Structures are given as structure tokens and as C-alpha cells.
Image: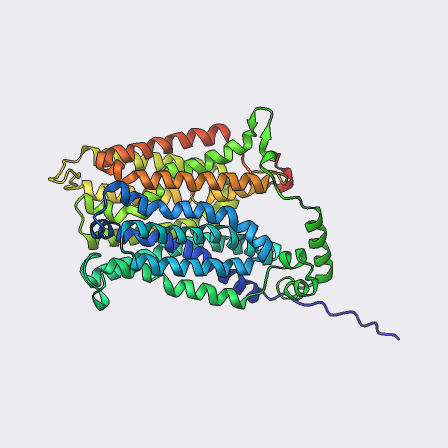
Length: 467
């Protein structure tokens, strides 16, 4: 009897894939950390640099302009030099921004350092999900891909927690902390360890198999695939090679119809813009200033902000659990309804409150509790719907031919809208908080009709079915 020896197929290592995804997701953590860490420092740096509301607003939102640049170029850099090298560049930019923001001499060079950090945020927002998708087995891709969103909201939480403890330990964000350096500067320096960890992690993970095949480095690609997928890796290398050969870079001209942009592209832009116009980032950039303006102490304001970020993490987990069960459209409708009611409540509460000597609404009696509940319920409504679901929709609503180009346009629109909302909040706050939140409530109401009239459900559909 002859025994035929079959080649032993390599087995995948789930723990190894998880490790790769976690390292890439540090970019998402820094994304969240970098955008939120300024929350506890806004008032202090405004006083330190004697900046007006317009300059302060621009200082907060200048990072978003950098994000648009980073997101636009990251894909091209990653295709040319590799995903890992792009991660290393992003980690260096995060480090430079953290150090520079803490040593800034004027509001103007502070803006430059924040702009550098924004480029890193934009790059991380593109490269982390791309790398995770390219190293993940199909049956794990959804859960591993969700690590990016979880990392972002966790980064927001840790940044706000650091702000809180530093401000409490120093007495206030303006007070001297270690070595006599003002506490608000240390808030930015807390980002340094994570930036270093990102660089060290990126140096220890392999390049994406897809990039390696595109560069003709098939043997290296097969080695990585053996660890992350197992099975017949040579067949997988061939499959990737064929895909790479067939692909054509998406062009903006693909998005044009007879009468301008295709309708589906406008819908994607609308989703992106409305996600920002409801004012969610006002909560994460300015909430400590907001709560101080209506009568809470700095310590209590920072603690309220930490609680809000915990709410954001919990609701992101809720969205991950239910988006494939309930569908995208029902979650968006529920979120729009909830945001309209809660933002309307905030607008009414702030608008009807008596003004103090500084012209800020004074929340007395139950009005403070109502505002707190409404703000956290608003974050809850956004967190299980328009936060993560918009990104899910943008990833699957476009057909294969236009997906890359349409996503880049929609993402650019989102950064621009984020910049506009973040820059205009300080001047709007000077006009009146009731007015500002009334505008966000109006955007939330518009988002409800937008979903009802224009959004088609994508749950359970293959990407190839999108038209």
C-alpha cells in the first residue's frame, strides 16, 4: 500500500492577526486622542495667548485642515512606499505635534503644530482601516475592522481623562504643574508615549500582503499570508496578483453623470456633512468650556466630559452589536429623532436661562440636570447611529467602479464640515448657546428627512449589488 504524502498547509494564527490589527488601531487611538486632548486646554491657552474667540476657534479646528491633507495623500503614499512606512511617518508627525503644541510660544505657532498633528490624524484615518482589512481573514474582517472605531472613541476617553487628572492635580489648566510648566501644556505632552508606541509597533509588524504582491515581492507576501490566513497561500498570492493587475485607479471623472455629480455621490456627501452639522465635535472639542460657561466648575466640567466620552464608547459597542441585525437605515432614523429632541432640549434650556454678568446662561435649579441629561442622551443617540453607521454606509453604498473616488470626496466633505462647525462655535457661543444649539437641532431634523427620502438600506447586500 502506497501512502501519498500531502503537503501540510500552514495554519492561520488568530492571535497574530489580532496583534497586527491592534498595532494598526493605535493609529485610531491617536486619531481620537489628538482631536480630543485640546478640550481641557481651550480656555487656558486662549487666556495664555490672549486670543479672541475667532482665533481660539481656528486654533482648535486648524488640525482638521491638516487632516484633510493627510487623508488625501495617505493613500497615494501608502501605495508607493507601503502601509507600514506610512504608519511610521504618521507616528513621527503625532510626536512632533504633541511636543510642539506643548512648547508653543504664540497662538500662531500653536496652530502650525496642531496642523502637523492633523496631517497625522488624516493619515491614520486612512491607513489603519486599510491595513486591517488587508491582513484580516474574511470571517474576522468586520470585527477586526471595528477595532478602528473603538480605538478612536477610546483615544477620546483617555485624552479627556488625562486632561481631568492634570487639571485637578494642578488646581486648574492654567496653573503650574510639574517643573512649573502650566498644566495645559502637559495635556498635549501626554500624547507622547502613545506616539512612540505606535512607531515601535509599526516597526515590528510586516507589510501588507497586498502591497507586497503589488511590488512583486511574492515570497514575502506568502510568508505573511501563511500566518494570517493559512491554507493554500500560493493560490491567494495569485488571486491578489490578478486583482492588482485588473485594478485601475479611481478617477474623479468616474463620479460625473450627465448633469454633474452622480446622485449617489451627492447622497454620500450629504451623509458626511450632516454627520458634522449636528455639532457632535462641539461636545468633544469644547464641552469643558461649555459647561464652565453655564456655571459648572472647571473640575466638574472636565469630569462631565469624561462621563460623556464613556457614553460614546458604550454606544459604539451598541452600534457594532446591532448594525448587522437592525440595518443601517432604522438606526439612522432613530438617531436623527433622538438628536433632534435632545438638541432641541439643549437649545430651549440654554435659550431660556437667565444671563450672568459675563452674558452666559446661568443654569439654576433643575435646568443644569436637564442640560446634562440632554447632552449625554444626545451623545448616546449619535453614538449608536450617525457616528459609526455613516462610515459603514460610505464603505458599502458605492459600486466597485467609483468606491475609491467617491469615498475620498465624501471624506473630504466631512473634514471641511467638521472644520466649519468647530471654527464657528466660539463666535456662535458669543451670540448665544441657545442659538448655537438651535442650529444643530435644525441640522438633526434635516438629517431625519434626508434619511427617509434618500437613503436605501444596504444591510445584507453584496458590494457587487450596489448600483
